[in-house]
Image 1: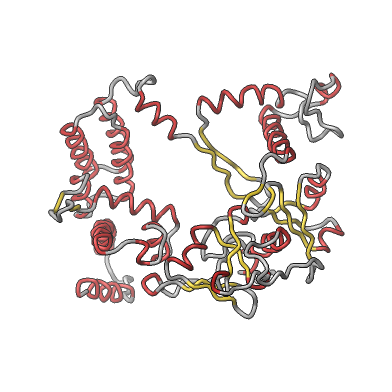
Image 2 (image 1 turned 90 degrees about the vertical axis):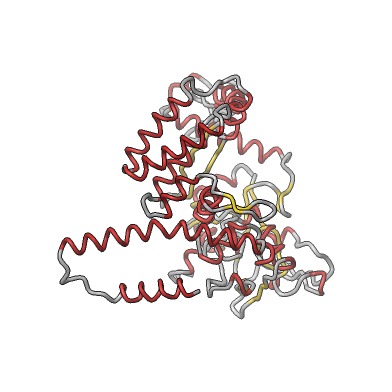
Length: 449
């Protein structure tokens, strides 16, 4: 379009401009103008996305959802793509079922953004505050609150807006949430979460979450028993996990309360895995699955890799093995196990799943974070129903939604001569982006392996 071409031409010109001879006043004016344009662009993006939605669907583009379509096309993280779409739902112009135009859900905020008066942080404060308004607040009052917040945002910095928004919320909801109201109970239930963060350089992982009242009721007696002094202490030669620890074990326990609770939860997870009651998941027994090279295993050095892509030092692998709760796959160039089954079966065997788990570590779709525990075996050369072979050199890991893209939504997979799989997107999502997934193999980026 002409306007976009003009914008690109202006940006190209500015990119080559030298500002060394400009005065401070001129430089500050340029900075202000650029900031205003930067603030206005999201409003235009919202309108563009609304027009796209009116003409097609994510499935027709070859994506599972609008979030995936936006993420693939613009190389955005799922979080950022989701944020933009959610913001657009509130700030973009709308249409009725019959095609008649409607104002945005938050018209004041939308107009302020289009004028370049507010930042993304202002928008987040406004939308978060509006979400906190209880259902009992009527529509005229809500509309007035949104207009007031947009006006505040146009005149104040985000910190001041945050304080004003908090005051406005207190005025409109002076009593706060009613703990006995059904709506508030549902809202509290929705806040439940448990997020396990990535590993740091030492292999440890931080986590955060919010547990419901029911969850707390379950955890309290478990922690009361297993997190007591002397219980589940990994420093003991034979940690006490049942019954009552000896007084000697209690006296020798120097762990903090947090460390005892950590060790208690590890014990609960280990007991659940050892029970065998969890069955199978995606062709693998629900247990710890590890892969390591024969050299690392023999010399007790390096690390093993779990089916979720986590790294476990070999000293910890040996400790895990003492509990007999893991599947340990030790690999050399050839495993020596019969892995070729041709077309005698559609589903990969456990042996093949173990090899794929160690080789791929997770979904092979570019950028997908799903680890091997959540993946299926994908016939990368040719689908089984169309004559494909269930051989290890034709199989890769793919999560369920991405696996289905190949047959349903125009994606193709191609195995290269090096054994890696490339995912070829449909034309409307193809911007020359990466075809392979290095998320589970960061060592390949630096050529470590």
